[in-house]
Amino acid sequence: MTLFDEPTCVCGSPCTLGTVHRLDGPCFVWEPPDTNHLGRFQAHSATSRNAALAVYPRTGTQRARVLNYLRSARDGRTDEEIATGLAMNPSSVRPRRIELVTGGWARAMFTAAGAPVERRTRAGVDAQVWEATNAARSYLP
Image (cartoon, rainbow, N blue to C red):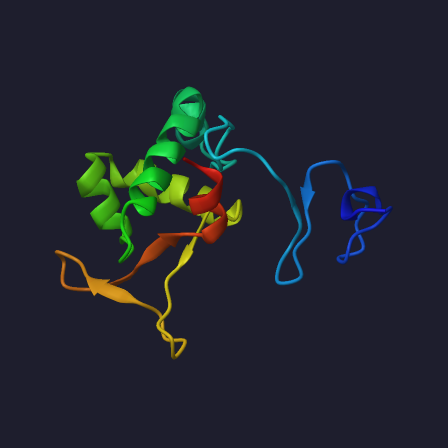
């Protein structure tokens, strides 16, 4: 019996084919990083909902671009660096990066001592540095 055959997972929820089982967080259904899906939006805002619907056909492409950029950067990248390097709107970069983190494709960088890796932005504030996970590096060519 594999993890995918078990009636419940470690979190106590019913398992489904394709579920990724995690001991360090919630389980989720695996999907390739370039799959389009509707992003989050503010339920009370028609503008937010319409923006999410407008970008829906590009979410997979944007997510793949962000991930490939993170994969090429051994020292990681901040959201600002990603936006600048890919000439993408920061309002598009952050949601795609969050989706990559949620999907297990990207993660925050930490030093060997466990401190978060941060870099100064153009505004002079420290920002978290993000990197592709080992799974992302091995899955994608």
